Length: 262
Image 1: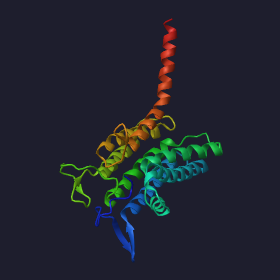
Image 2: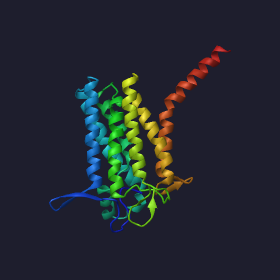
Image 3: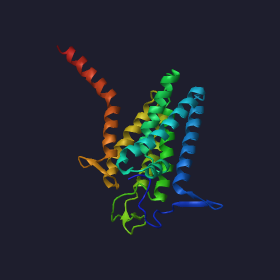
Image 4: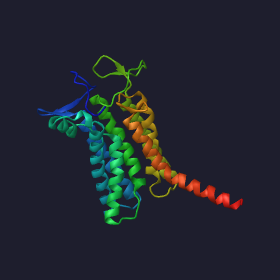
């Protein structure tokens, strides 16, 4: 499943938000753009509050945004490569499909590459974390109104009919509420307790990929293998990668403790 949706008339809750003259403005494009703007503002105000508004902060942000845009698009194409059988279908994916997971991975790699190229040593993850959380929370509202990234059938009272007469999980809103909660937690945690550079972004990534692994069970997604979706498999590898540092530290401590008892 991507940000396209079934070819059904009137699919989605409110796919067109309003018109500028005769030009329709899609809910998806509007809220994704609004999420990017809101995230950028949160990043700027956090940087100013921490007295980190400088050229490095700007360049890392640009690198992260570029990486996020590329990653969100490339992962969508890779997952759906078997559905791309012509230039027209490739153009459709280039103009529509994006993935949050690809954006997060691409944004992280973009920031890392920017720092490496420009020899920047400072970490800005604590600034990025609440900005990303709020941006995704707002962007997912666009997914909900557009009718993409929808859930499986359910009889829960808050189920939504996206256009095919089937009541489904509003998984887009689940993710929006989860990321809004993460935004509040990160902002509160950052105020109450000093943390090491980059720590909050790692916290956000871990919890988001745990959430995403679980919510995939009630989303309409293609199964890859082992009864898991492509996104669940990617989430598993990302979580393992994020846990590597902790595993290394634990291993070192176990070795050191073992030497003490020799």
